[in-house]
Length: 328
Length: 284
Image (cartoon, rainbow over all chains, first blue to last red; front, side, top):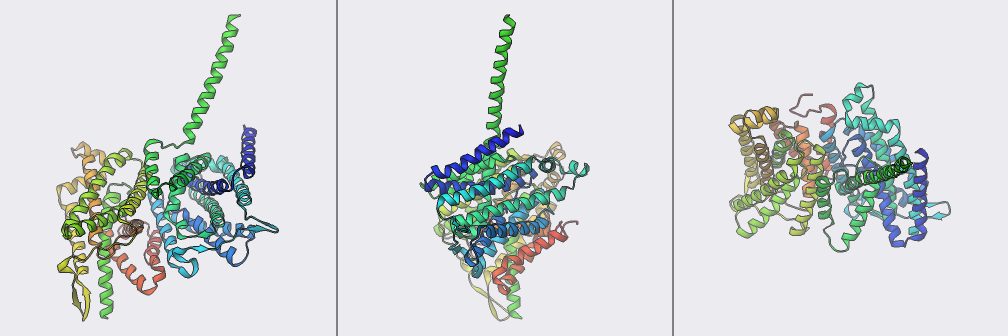
């Protein structure tokens, strides 16, 4: 089983990387955006789906890291390793700091606190014009480079994004299947019982929160480099809402779900935006439809169905063998 | 000295407006435990509907009535068709009202446009009053009066009426209240709509002061949440004190450090959570 999943992952990685030579530049831009937002959705899902902490302020980490990336890339250096290090460090520190505050609360209070933090961050980005450019945004962020390579073309930037995505996704998937990940799910189901069993519930939540912030920060760095501009929108509730919707549509509590959700939501966003400006209306409607009609999202029911089909097929084959056997 | 008094009055009148909102959220979230992220949207939509009605009829009262009617119908529909099914599921309620927040916000943007709108101050109240030798808008005194009136009415309703007793009973123990003959689902729906109506009223009476603009729904939601957390969730007295405090802090923040005015509100909220998680009125 362990080998099967590694093979699946490697095939998936090869497909993702290989498609950089097959897709048109337009589709590569779309695919890059999908990968970046999938990272963000996965980081949100680590909190929402695994620990049961629904955060409405997760865009703070994405946005802050995007701004920091912008400052460094414009002012100092566009070296990708430096940018990556700085954005991971900043989002990790910010996560460690905010986590101390918001994790004092549980359930709905956590959610409301995360919303309040998000409002503060948005307010700062909006009002501190001299630093962030206010609502005009921080523009002119160059594409990153690494010694002689410059990731300017959409295919090279896509390959960079893919590699970072694969590393983060691989680590996240390993994390959720590790004993640590399982204890997170235990906390989601019953924090009290986990505490009684001797687990340090707060510390588990805190570590998950910081890891999740770091992944969101990585997504923020990539988003800033792809768009070339950062605006307060990246910090706002809208961005958190889109990430959460991806996790929800695909299926919260799995790591494949947010990836599927990212594909669905980004493709929908691009498709709808060509015909109407009312994308946000549609976003609201999808929220309601998913919660009422498909609370498990796409991935889990689909997987169950496939497993069921597979086992019934196996069952039928077995029956046929038995039938042959009994004739003799 | 007189300038200080003026600013304090400014802060208190803004605080009274915020109290209308916080009182509504105290009803829905504090008492009913319905997580309602559309509270700010009710406020904004109430303002927009009030604005349209006042332009059409010229009557401020008609504006209040129309916005209460429209927002109540929407709140009723949300409660009956969406929230009631997920009575025990907080996460589903959050996500549903989150969706409605974006839905109402974007549809309002579509209908009323992106330019900030301001409701004109109604006729006899648009003058100014002399306060220690300086002119002060009379309408702000009206706001203070409305806030006090609503506070008084809510206190009377909650503590001294039969329905108020039912509400307290149902909040305390839903099943026992139901068994004693209180129709808890009806009561819940009624209180939910009352909370929404308060937000709608706040939207109209706040129209001449704050006005309506895209994103105002989320901003007001954030402020209201900060207030009920500061005050201690579920307490009208706490919400009242916190609303006045936030009104004053906001006014002070805008004058002293305009770039970081939001800190003046959310800073104390975060400190409160860190050191006294129950809020002003709560037990630690």
